[in-house]
Length: 369
View 1 (cartoon, helix red, strand yellow):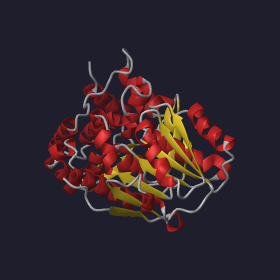
View 2 (cartoon, rainbow, N blue to C red; view 1 turned 135 degrees about the horizontal axis):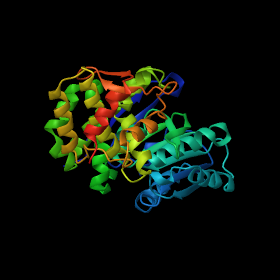
View 3 (cartoon, rainbow, N blue to C red; view 1 turned 180 degrees about the horizontal axis):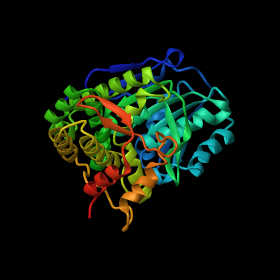
View 4 (cartoon, rainbow, N blue to C red; view 1 turned 45 degrees about the vertical axis):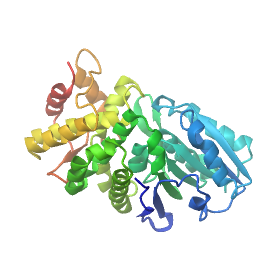
């Protein structure tokens, strides 16, 4: 099957607006970068897995525009989303005399994108950067919207900044080399857009899951484009997550607790979010917001995508208490009160608190014995 035609999605943020380009054969095409501002230097940030596959090709594509193209290779994985890895980027920028016009290119998944964006926001108080996401999760979620961060041992993405890229290049061909586990992890962020905003999209995913898992280009192009459209609509109304944008965190409050509680990297982010969506749906059910049919439908789809639907036990005794401790560190919490993204009827999401005893019942129900 031939690669679909070029598709673009606009992020409308006044003077910080930019476009998302979606198609195969994009990232190593010099024409993808012709509208970027001129500069002497470019810095590619990648990791030890993606770098050997794609870094040299991106270097060649950027060579006509930049006199100096430097590549810094970070360790791979959520475990390394730290100050130490962030400093590797700053070390490269400073040692190569990079100035405030230097353009950073994030070549990799969500971890690389988040850290590159944070480095760009911080270096000389802000330099331009471009997202070149190579995982499904990054293409449909983390590369879009300007959230940048590193992790802290006590909480995920707790140290960061809002900083928008100049452009996002979603090259569908990079998904061909993605391990199946990573593809499934990305599908968690695709699936979430249905319950919170577009049940027709959820139905489309259900009908085309086989094609998605088989990586048919047309199916991948559709889920990336529609996911980006929904996120663009949300971000355009609430760039800094003062209200509406919080709905994009459906499943993430429980999911981040799983990641932090197990130790970053034990479960992939998307795996934790997939399971977290099941927990959030069960909590929505117990609060009378949705019916059991909806919860079963969503749970089945998450399972079809190859994602876990049962959470891990984070400690032998008072497992629910450990979840609650970690969730109180969530960025949406206020004065120690946990705010959950819940489904207020199919296709609608809301942000609200829930009694601890009810949350405990959900956790006990949803965790592996």
